[in-house]
Amino acid sequence: MRTVDGGGRRQDSVANGFDAVSPSADIVLVHDAARPFISASLIDQTIDAAATHGAAIVALQSKDTVKRVEAGIIVDTIPREQVYLAQTPQGFRREVLAAAVAIGRSGIEATDEAALAERAGYRVHVVDGDPGNVKITTEEDLRVARARTGATSTTRIGTGYDLHRLVEGRPLIVGGVTIPFDKGPLGHSDGDVACHAATDAILGAACLGDIGRHFPDTDAKWKAADSVALLREAARMVREAGYEVSNLDLTVILERPKIKDVVDTMRARLADALGVDRDRVSIKGKTNEGVDAVGRGEAIAAHAVALLRAR
Image 1 (cartoon, rainbow, N blue to C red):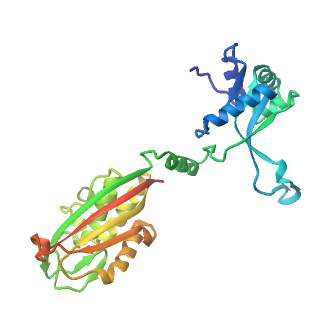
Image 2 (cartoon, one colour):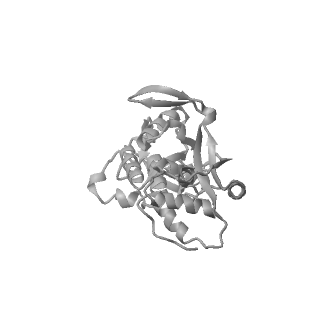
Image 3 (tube, rainbow, N blue to C red):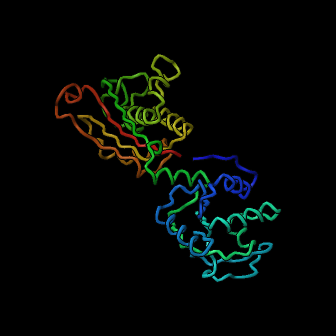
């Protein structure tokens, strides 16, 4: 592989690249690095068409009606059967591309080599393009491309766990909802195990540490803190790190009382804190079948799994 310096315009970069092409090359292809999903079949078709016709370009026929507009007013409707959207690669017999490069260097400007070949008097053949041969131009294009390739940086998974002893004289707050009961979680904050597990899950997925690092129980600032507010702040940090919450799945383990009647309210509170739709938050209630401190009604626990995706 050889590399050459780029130019101020596409045609300058291609001209520099063409200067480095081996004299023995009969067919030369020009392809955008911004189109990473080109198929071997399309490359082969372009080579064959260039060898047969001298110049060939991959292009997609427009599916939309095309309007020519001047000063915000439609002045013409162009039959879409005649409109093609150019892709790459573009292929040329060596002498055709040499003529295109020469006319470009003479002062004529064009947005691609096919246009320069046309100006040099050559007819350019069209090879049917591929809708999947997309060009990555915007951040959204890049996000979609990463998802398409399954790049590991696109999604991140984190888990969270929390447990608190239940004591008299404390409100039972779970998922931001106060549930009538004679006991509540003992903790520095409000002891909301659902929010704490969710906070650890999203922070862990983004490799931002855990709830103790950001909201330590040694800091009076967080005394009796609203755990929904802590989750909201963690979600802000996750977004700042370049991720957003795709979904959250929570299991609350509590012998009694049952939480099924307030699950939807809890989902709404957590979804609001995370900045996502409620249908991305799942909360399930389980008992511990009388086993250990949770099963004896002495404690409450929660497990969480969060999926993040790159923004």
